[in-house]
Length: 324
Ligand SMILES: NC(=O)C[C@H](N)C(=O)O
Image (cartoon, rainbow, N blue to C red; front, side):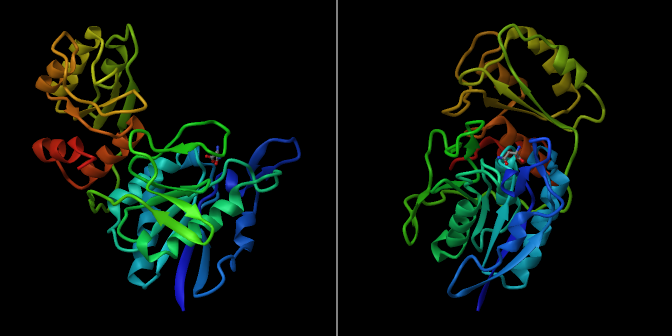
């Protein structure tokens, strides 16, 4: 019999209201009781890796998850499902997407309503994720994120609503598949895989968002020997307020890699404009434009690229293109 591995990590999917009415993780994850959800050809192996709200998740724990999945792949598991809090789900899913070989289905899911709430979406999403992991066509598509009857690529999916169960969306590109009555229907292929093995993670990689009237204060604060990298969410097609430039030039002079994405929800960052702080000037200064990723994903990719030992041109090439 084929085996699917479920790794629980916590999140609202595993939470219930406590005595004071606040949502919090309990001593036991209620999902651990569900170990025979998928009838038929598959046997489920259920493990609790963590029981954390996802804002508590760190790259170190993402690495631990990755290592557990590598072990499971080596032991011949047919697919893996990870349950996760939705706040940082996209970051863990993308970390796994970048650092695991693209061989078996790996599916991440979560819930917007707690396990004790009317209309809880947890079990439904878990079953959908299991059905996806049991679908041979789900292999080779990178890590997938399954919630609310949609299948998304980990690379581009993002949480877009604070409470709605239809929160996970893929801006610009759309989902790669949908859940149907008896399984999954895929309608997009994975165009590129940026597999990048790592055995550790790198800390002090920061993320800043640009805004009208921004100056160099925050950039100067990051001008430290400990800073390993910085992602900036620039405005529009990829521009920055001119008052930020002197401080950014100092970071570049100190060999801190700086990656620029757009703070826009749709589209890609490109060096288009020639004015002060415009994208063309930023690219000439040595800022790396990263196409198609949001800020939190670009940060994960930068951590992975640095941990893999990439530097200078190799790092820039790695960071530049997430699409083709
Ligand atoms: N829906 C959720 O899972 C949100 C929760 N705050 C978490 O990320 O752990």
